[in-house]
Length: 229
Image (cartoon, rainbow, N blue to C red; front, side, top):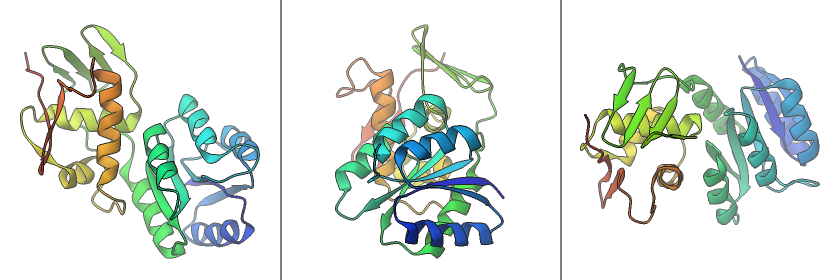
């Protein structure tokens, strides 16, 4: 059971999502625009936010950006089929998953269960600190230092980097990363891996277009290239 906030301006969607999520024993709060949604998020502190992109008063991407300034709560975006740019933007800003409208309420409920089963701190490597030539990754504190400078990563970005760094010089496929970071029952597309890899590179690399830490192995996946010490 979890506390879930659903932010959408369509009553029909609010009602059916609320019914399905409550049937699984969750506590569900509803908001009909971005401003109300942000206020409800701060009031109820949910474990998961289901957030529509197209909202009155404050759109979903703005709400997501504000949430990410305050929390690493799981966020699932609701998008129309024609909103590919907004969907990618949402993942870049920090959404964990997205569902395309029209959607099956049963599938949505299943994906909610999958997200809540992951846990922000599960599947972490046993080592407390991973030390490399340029990076230091502290598992217990969830801190990353690059050449002595602290790097701010979201919980999901930290998990992605730590999984790659646990197996330096080993190529991990997108499917393997989805399984280890997002969970075996993740329903989304493999592209979500590429988006979050790009986000980590933006924060770690001097030149994200010429990465030194996380390398792309075309047709296979990614590998962590920093040398352990």
